[in-house]
Picture 1 (cartoon, one colour):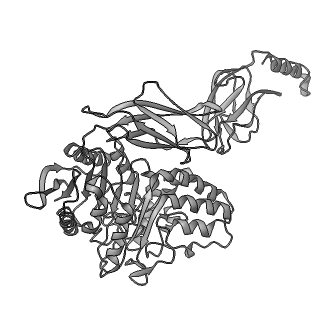
Picture 2 (cartoon, rainbow, N blue to C red):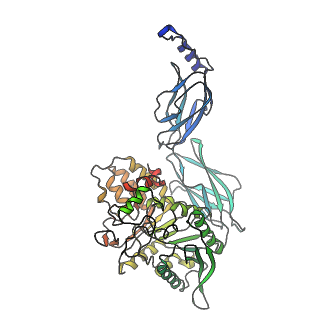
Picture 3 (spheres, helix red, strand yellow):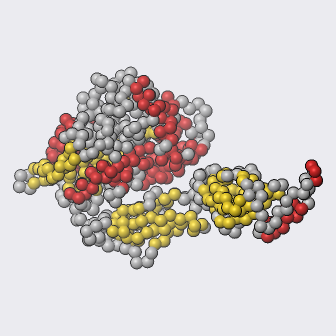
Length: 585
């Protein structure tokens, strides 16, 4: 460091101001100092665009920062100061496997250049969760996924009641296994896992490991029938559940149903097989009072009520309601104007026009609606991860929605288009969801049964997908490559399959969108291969129902099973606020 100041001193002494022959102040070794924030003259930033570090400087003269590339500094100039904090922020992601040098940080004191610091950026590493939940039995497993092109290492404290190992057959997966039963009365913390880059240990993430109580009940299947506008259909749904359970299929698994009688009043029922009566009985176990508007705290309470009544080693949830995919329950002003211009409601029954057949959207009439973020927070704060989350609601097979829910459930069962008012045929799908006396489930069988049922219905409309959430983080990586590739010059969004008949489409087929819009064949094929790992079941009728099209039934010409709202200009601001957008651009 002294060498730099000697050079500065020599340079300044040699300079005289030409006008008036006034001598410039000399730069002494104490004229500029870095007080904090740099180690060995290096500033190190995380791998992501927007990551930052602060340095504190002291200067006896006016100073400025010269042009930078790869990073930006705020402020970029200043007056003499005993301490000024300068923020250094990365302008791009580092997607390489190495720490890269972004450049030198040049300070100028009057006519003197001071070069003392270099800015480096760590390789990119993303961990898909900060907490992993294990069921209450020894041998229970769950996975944490690490996204990075560099090598990483895992460590955890000795004597921990779990193991953590990298799965060589599942890219980026760390398998966490419980070593003991949790026979206590509450969820316990088993310790923490530290995941760090092998060549940059300072780039690390900590993941907490918690274990649920061993309740010996293999599964609690929870039905949350939301709102009252679909109560006629909900009653038919409950009758269908009773019909299925009357065949004595649930074993030790428990089935709970929440139904509302009004916006603020609801009841929870337990449906179980009675051996003496040789049928399923329906027993009310609790009355609830709700507050509005609906939010994460209420959803958390609903799930906690289910868990308190029927604690189990694993949980699954069915949400019956209306649905609008990822679209916020309070859309931006542009969205509200769009809906009104199309003759649609902006705060009541979603997008139904008068005279349409009954279909389903998330929540009920405002204010009894949840955002996806409410569902995510409500489930995660109960320290459970669902085996599957079935949306008996419209438009919920959306990549933007699924990506937000990737850490609360192992699987999602949902439709990319409208779901008819009668919903899923539970008498036909529950035998698949409660296989082997409730200890196993066959999601593909349930999806197939749903579509087969509607093929012979009065309105033969049904589309469904089984989404495995563990692969969605890697899918985002592949989508980032697609977005960074050259775009097809002849791409026309009108050529992509849409899943509603609106004049201004909102939901497009994700796979076809990538195939048609991206000119990089390698990036497209990599994306399709990863999508095939994420969407395991893709069943549909030949066409789907929508009241908004030129005819009520719209043919399906391409079916990837999951939608995106990319290039939907009316929702641009809302869409850019989604986690999917932020992680893929």
